Length: 413
Image 1 (tube, rainbow, N blue to C red):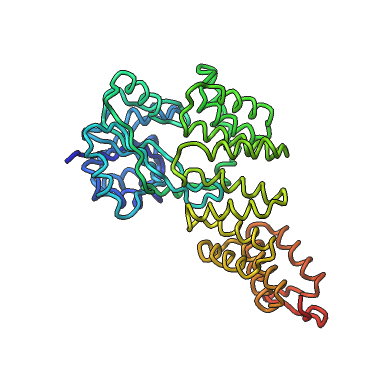
Image 2: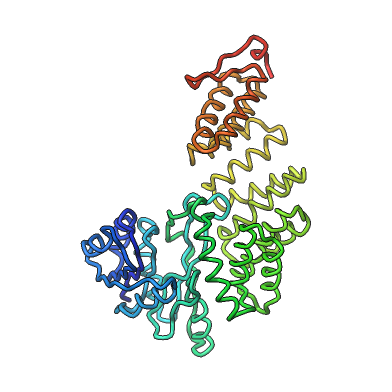
């Protein structure tokens, strides 16, 4: 049986590390943890799990740090995780069977982005044979893919496999962290330096182009992503990223035809369907905004056929059903979205809308009260807008969290 090492770089991860190491301790034969300057209990926690721990100075280069960690690995295969990731329960034996293939060089793993509302899955090359020429490249989005292609050109007997089910759970998805100015600036500088040295690199064009869009620099973003698409023989994952981000870019610029084209091109890439949920979901939202309710309905049904647990998919399907007057079906999907994510304020709010349309005033006001409470914690302006709107309808929201209803609001709506 092939042996397996866990390989990690960490810094101040005392809060996350135990959960990560618990998920792998019965799966791997060795744990190698390289610390880049922790000041908390990270090193002690790693050692308590039996990990071999090394310390290095941080030089703002993720690839260099990961390659240093690889130098300390001694087993046949390597599993790379970050501290805010963990293996899916019970997946270890299946991973062991996957690496038993003597012809396999890399097993790509599906990672679920917990909390992501648009693209809940990604494919990452985190499980690979310890080959002397496999190493990480790129200072920010460090990955082994470039070196894999080099090895395959010289040693074509190797195969790359895609593991067919979700293997990694990533809990570090935070919209506020992604939008952080400092984080965005660090990413921009690192990727700009890389792109200066590799001006035609399509992956860099995709990542930096998307970052420019987030930083309200649409002209630069679109130019970069369009440049990336001109690369011959694009790998499907990179082609998907370019088309997907161009769809977002053109949507922001209200260039609807171009946006729809790129979402459709993204969907056509030969990838696992779950990896294309973001493009399907955005295409459905685009169709709905254009008044194509039937098209949106079909697209969101496809989304839930791929992943019945996709919370945003249930919410969006509820919206499409509401637009067609299928209110009872809409209620079912709003309730499923709330079951999957109880703090989904918009789902509670639209559930209230549908209940009022059906004349179910008490149920509607209960849903609105929950929506207001959630909005007050995250978006007070939206909470106030909702309160004022309901007040105009004759429903007064009181400090107790309940409504006082006037006579005129009791009629069926």
